[in-house]
Image (cartoon, rainbow, N blue to C red; front, side, top):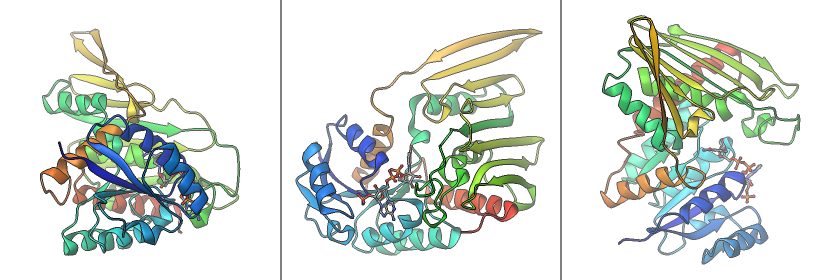
Length: 328
Ligand SMILES: NC(=O)c1ccc[n+]([C@@H]2O[C@H](COP(=O)([O-])OP(=O)(O)OC[C@H]3O[C@@H](n4cnc5c(N)ncnc54)[C@H](OP(=O)(O)O)[C@@H]3O)[C@@H](O)[C@H]2O)c1
């Protein structure tokens, strides 16, 4: 069994959960971590048994025997940190949102292609077993043709101008942090909406990032996607796929759910089937396992989250931002 040596850049909240989940994978090992603080890197490395710790991101890419880097810094640094790795021929799993705008995203994809190095956006939702099962049910025609996708993601975050969620210089706001999930569900179901078929509205915090954002995408064939994000309330965090013959509900929190309800109409009677698909850990092991499989197959991009999908997602977020006046 090939052991894959992982590196992590940026040792915040998500890095910790990801490192926890790497421990669930027998073919993964945390090999090196890099922080803006050497002390933090050394403490993290000691906690997770990683043999190498660096106090500068630039040093990590020169670490011997490194197979893949997980970029877990604030949004505004994803492009710079990813380019650093790709230009040193190191594969990258980059946190969402992949980039701040389509210009950055295209540079990242071009660097991956020029250097022939693997690159994927860390859209873990695509790999959660229950979410994947919902997609398979749709594919099999279980609920007929899907005409409406609805999803929300909101949590109540006390105002803190220094947190990356409120700080404009770090790419703050609800859309890029959590509104990206309803958007990606729409794109997985229906593809990229035409720019003129996107409607959007947002309210703003005193730091001038979006507090709440609502959007609709209209598609040919009487299909609609509705999305909502907010950092000002705990919303249900549910998703619904409505088809002509039934509905699939992805229970809270839908983006890493372990529960689906499939409802179908038999005449006027609604018949419900509850499905539980539990998993261990935080939910990040599935994307990490997929990345390692891609590397073993010498793939330069994922077939589940291809770079074309990521570019479409970034362009869609750009279009929403343009409509609501959210400029970084
Ligand atoms: N997939 C998911 O479920 C998920 C969940 C949460 C977040 N995320 C994404 O992951 C990224 C990180 O989120 P997080 O919640 O882990 O953030 P966080 O707790 O604030 O951690 C970000 C880390 O980046 C590093 N950093 C470098 N320059 C920084 C700067 N100028 N200001 C602040 N931090 C800086 C810091 O680590 P060092 O100083 O140690 O380098 C910091 O701890 C975001 O892009 C977010 O969208 C994804």
